[in-house]
Length: 229
Image 1 (tube, rainbow, N blue to C red):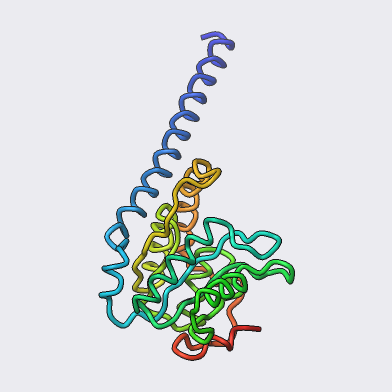
Image 2: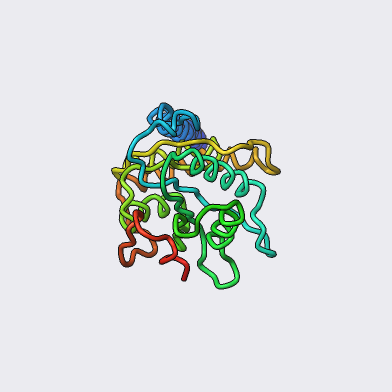
Protein backbone atom coordinates (compact mmCIF):
# COMPACT_ATOMS: atom_id res chain seq x y z
CA UNK A 1 0.00 0.00 0.00
CA UNK A 2 1.40 3.33 -1.02
CA UNK A 3 1.88 6.11 1.46
CA UNK A 4 -0.98 8.10 -0.11
CA UNK A 5 -3.36 5.15 0.20
CA UNK A 6 -2.42 4.74 3.86
CA UNK A 7 -3.11 8.41 4.51
CA UNK A 8 -6.46 8.20 2.72
CA UNK A 9 -7.42 5.11 4.70
CA UNK A 10 -6.51 6.76 7.99
CA UNK A 11 -8.46 9.84 6.96
CA UNK A 12 -11.48 7.69 6.16
CA UNK A 13 -11.28 5.94 9.52
CA UNK A 14 -10.96 9.31 11.27
CA UNK A 15 -14.01 10.71 9.50
CA UNK A 16 -16.07 7.62 10.35
CA UNK A 17 -14.97 7.70 13.99
CA UNK A 18 -15.78 11.40 14.24
CA UNK A 19 -19.20 10.83 12.71
CA UNK A 20 -19.90 8.02 15.18
CA UNK A 21 -18.89 10.24 18.10
CA UNK A 22 -21.11 13.08 16.90
CA UNK A 23 -24.11 10.80 16.37
CA UNK A 24 -23.52 9.20 19.78
CA UNK A 25 -23.31 12.58 21.49
CA UNK A 26 -26.54 13.75 19.86
CA UNK A 27 -28.24 10.50 20.86
CA UNK A 28 -27.13 10.92 24.47
CA UNK A 29 -28.46 14.48 24.56
CA UNK A 30 -31.89 13.37 23.37
CA UNK A 31 -31.94 10.30 25.60
CA UNK A 32 -31.24 12.43 28.68
CA UNK A 33 -33.88 14.91 27.57
CA UNK A 34 -36.43 12.11 27.23
CA UNK A 35 -35.45 10.65 30.61
CA UNK A 36 -35.89 13.99 32.41
CA UNK A 37 -39.33 14.53 30.90
CA UNK A 38 -40.52 10.97 31.53
CA UNK A 39 -39.27 10.95 35.12
CA UNK A 40 -41.51 13.80 36.28
CA UNK A 41 -44.36 14.03 33.77
CA UNK A 42 -46.89 12.65 36.24
CA UNK A 43 -46.10 15.46 38.69
CA UNK A 44 -47.47 18.12 36.35
CA UNK A 45 -50.98 18.76 37.61
CA UNK A 46 -53.92 21.13 37.23
CA UNK A 47 -55.02 23.86 39.61
CA UNK A 48 -57.93 21.64 40.69
CA UNK A 49 -55.53 18.82 41.53
CA UNK A 50 -53.13 21.20 43.26
CA UNK A 51 -55.72 22.51 45.69
CA UNK A 52 -56.41 18.94 46.83
CA UNK A 53 -52.79 18.40 47.87
CA UNK A 54 -52.17 18.56 51.60
CA UNK A 55 -49.42 20.23 53.63
CA UNK A 56 -47.87 22.16 50.76
CA UNK A 57 -45.32 24.57 52.24
CA UNK A 58 -45.38 27.15 49.44
CA UNK A 59 -46.01 27.99 45.83
CA UNK A 60 -42.63 28.60 44.21
CA UNK A 61 -42.92 31.06 41.32
CA UNK A 62 -39.77 31.04 39.21
CA UNK A 63 -38.63 34.44 37.99
CA UNK A 64 -37.69 35.63 34.53
CA UNK A 65 -37.13 38.92 32.78
CA UNK A 66 -38.42 42.25 34.02
CA UNK A 67 -38.47 45.41 31.90
CA UNK A 68 -36.38 48.46 32.81
CA UNK A 69 -39.49 50.27 34.09
CA UNK A 70 -40.16 47.46 36.58
CA UNK A 71 -42.98 45.84 34.62
CA UNK A 72 -42.90 42.03 34.40
CA UNK A 73 -42.43 40.51 30.97
CA UNK A 74 -45.46 38.65 29.53
CA UNK A 75 -43.88 35.33 30.48
CA UNK A 76 -43.34 36.42 34.07
CA UNK A 77 -46.79 37.94 34.30
CA UNK A 78 -48.33 34.61 33.26
CA UNK A 79 -46.35 32.85 35.97
CA UNK A 80 -47.46 35.38 38.57
CA UNK A 81 -51.10 35.09 37.57
CA UNK A 82 -50.97 31.30 37.96
CA UNK A 83 -49.19 31.53 41.31
CA UNK A 84 -51.79 34.00 42.58
CA UNK A 85 -54.58 31.76 41.33
CA UNK A 86 -53.13 28.84 43.28
CA UNK A 87 -52.77 30.96 46.42
CA UNK A 88 -56.37 32.14 46.12
CA UNK A 89 -57.71 28.57 45.99
CA UNK A 90 -55.65 27.76 49.11
CA UNK A 91 -53.24 25.39 47.39
CA UNK A 92 -50.58 26.70 49.81
CA UNK A 93 -50.40 29.40 52.48
CA UNK A 94 -47.28 31.14 51.15
CA UNK A 95 -45.83 32.38 47.87
CA UNK A 96 -42.08 32.19 47.30
CA UNK A 97 -40.93 34.54 44.55
CA UNK A 98 -37.51 33.40 43.38
CA UNK A 99 -35.43 35.25 40.85
CA UNK A 100 -32.47 37.44 40.03
CA UNK A 101 -31.73 40.44 42.23
CA UNK A 102 -28.01 40.35 41.75
CA UNK A 103 -27.80 44.02 40.80
CA UNK A 104 -29.24 47.09 42.52
CA UNK A 105 -30.98 48.25 39.36
CA UNK A 106 -32.42 44.87 38.38
CA UNK A 107 -34.90 43.30 40.77
CA UNK A 108 -37.08 40.45 39.55
CA UNK A 109 -38.37 39.44 42.96
CA UNK A 110 -39.33 42.94 44.05
CA UNK A 111 -41.37 43.30 40.89
CA UNK A 112 -42.95 39.92 41.53
CA UNK A 113 -43.93 40.74 45.11
CA UNK A 114 -45.31 44.15 44.18
CA UNK A 115 -47.40 42.57 41.43
CA UNK A 116 -48.91 40.09 43.91
CA UNK A 117 -49.60 42.82 46.47
CA UNK A 118 -51.39 44.82 43.77
CA UNK A 119 -53.57 41.73 43.31
CA UNK A 120 -54.54 41.91 47.02
CA UNK A 121 -52.18 39.24 48.32
CA UNK A 122 -51.11 39.88 51.92
CA UNK A 123 -47.48 41.04 52.02
CA UNK A 124 -46.53 38.76 54.91
CA UNK A 125 -47.52 35.72 52.84
CA UNK A 126 -45.06 36.63 50.08
CA UNK A 127 -41.41 35.63 50.48
CA UNK A 128 -38.64 36.76 48.15
CA UNK A 129 -35.54 34.78 47.29
CA UNK A 130 -33.19 37.44 45.99
CA UNK A 131 -30.55 34.89 44.92
CA UNK A 132 -32.60 32.58 42.72
CA UNK A 133 -30.18 33.02 39.83
CA UNK A 134 -31.11 29.77 38.09
CA UNK A 135 -33.75 27.06 38.26
CA UNK A 136 -31.33 24.84 40.17
CA UNK A 137 -30.44 27.55 42.67
CA UNK A 138 -34.06 28.55 43.22
CA UNK A 139 -35.05 25.01 44.18
CA UNK A 140 -31.90 24.32 46.19
CA UNK A 141 -32.48 27.49 48.21
CA UNK A 142 -36.21 26.82 48.61
CA UNK A 143 -35.24 23.69 50.51
CA UNK A 144 -32.05 24.70 52.30
CA UNK A 145 -32.80 28.34 53.13
CA UNK A 146 -36.59 28.47 53.36
CA UNK A 147 -37.15 24.95 54.69
CA UNK A 148 -39.68 24.04 52.01
CA UNK A 149 -40.00 20.28 51.68
CA UNK A 150 -43.26 20.06 49.74
CA UNK A 151 -43.93 22.65 47.07
CA UNK A 152 -45.88 23.58 43.98
CA UNK A 153 -43.70 25.03 41.22
CA UNK A 154 -45.12 27.53 38.75
CA UNK A 155 -43.51 28.20 35.38
CA UNK A 156 -44.32 27.53 31.73
CA UNK A 157 -44.92 23.92 30.68
CA UNK A 158 -41.67 23.52 28.74
CA UNK A 159 -39.69 24.60 31.83
CA UNK A 160 -41.60 22.53 34.39
CA UNK A 161 -39.94 19.23 33.47
CA UNK A 162 -36.48 20.49 34.38
CA UNK A 163 -37.66 22.23 37.54
CA UNK A 164 -39.46 19.13 38.77
CA UNK A 165 -36.51 16.88 37.94
CA UNK A 166 -34.17 19.10 39.93
CA UNK A 167 -36.59 19.09 42.87
CA UNK A 168 -36.79 15.31 42.80
CA UNK A 169 -33.01 14.95 42.83
CA UNK A 170 -32.64 17.48 45.65
CA UNK A 171 -35.14 15.64 47.82
CA UNK A 172 -38.06 18.05 47.49
CA UNK A 173 -41.57 16.72 46.96
CA UNK A 174 -42.76 18.93 44.14
CA UNK A 175 -45.72 19.29 41.83
CA UNK A 176 -45.85 21.59 38.85
CA UNK A 177 -48.66 23.75 37.53
CA UNK A 178 -48.08 25.26 34.11
CA UNK A 179 -48.53 28.97 33.60
CA UNK A 180 -50.41 30.10 30.55
CA UNK A 181 -48.52 30.80 27.37
CA UNK A 182 -46.35 28.87 24.93
CA UNK A 183 -46.16 31.26 22.00
CA UNK A 184 -43.87 34.03 23.22
CA UNK A 185 -41.48 35.69 20.80
CA UNK A 186 -38.44 33.44 20.40
CA UNK A 187 -40.16 30.39 21.90
CA UNK A 188 -38.76 28.00 19.26
CA UNK A 189 -35.22 28.95 20.24
CA UNK A 190 -36.16 28.72 23.90
CA UNK A 191 -37.49 25.19 23.42
CA UNK A 192 -34.25 24.16 21.71
CA UNK A 193 -32.10 25.63 24.47
CA UNK A 194 -34.22 23.87 27.07
CA UNK A 195 -33.13 20.48 25.70
CA UNK A 196 -29.53 21.44 26.43
CA UNK A 197 -30.49 22.95 29.79
CA UNK A 198 -32.12 19.67 30.84
CA UNK A 199 -28.85 17.90 30.02
CA UNK A 200 -26.84 20.49 31.97
CA UNK A 201 -29.00 20.17 35.07
CA UNK A 202 -29.10 16.38 34.74
CA UNK A 203 -25.33 16.43 35.24
CA UNK A 204 -25.52 19.11 37.92
CA UNK A 205 -27.97 16.99 39.91
CA UNK A 206 -25.42 14.18 40.00
CA UNK A 207 -22.85 16.37 41.75
CA UNK A 208 -25.28 18.70 43.59
CA UNK A 209 -23.06 21.80 43.86
CA UNK A 210 -24.01 24.51 46.33
CA UNK A 211 -25.67 27.62 44.88
CA UNK A 212 -23.93 30.97 44.52
CA UNK A 213 -25.22 32.06 47.93
CA UNK A 214 -26.70 30.25 50.89
CA UNK A 215 -27.05 32.29 54.10
CA UNK A 216 -29.21 32.23 57.20
CA UNK A 217 -32.35 30.11 57.34
CA UNK A 218 -35.68 31.86 56.74
CA UNK A 219 -38.74 29.89 57.81
CA UNK A 220 -41.27 29.80 54.95
CA UNK A 221 -43.98 29.34 57.59
CA UNK A 222 -43.27 32.76 59.11
CA UNK A 223 -43.63 36.33 57.90
CA UNK A 224 -42.51 37.05 54.34
CA UNK A 225 -41.74 40.67 55.14
CA UNK A 226 -38.43 39.54 56.65
CA UNK A 227 -37.22 39.14 53.05
CA UNK A 228 -38.11 42.70 52.03
CA UNK A 229 -34.54 43.92 52.40
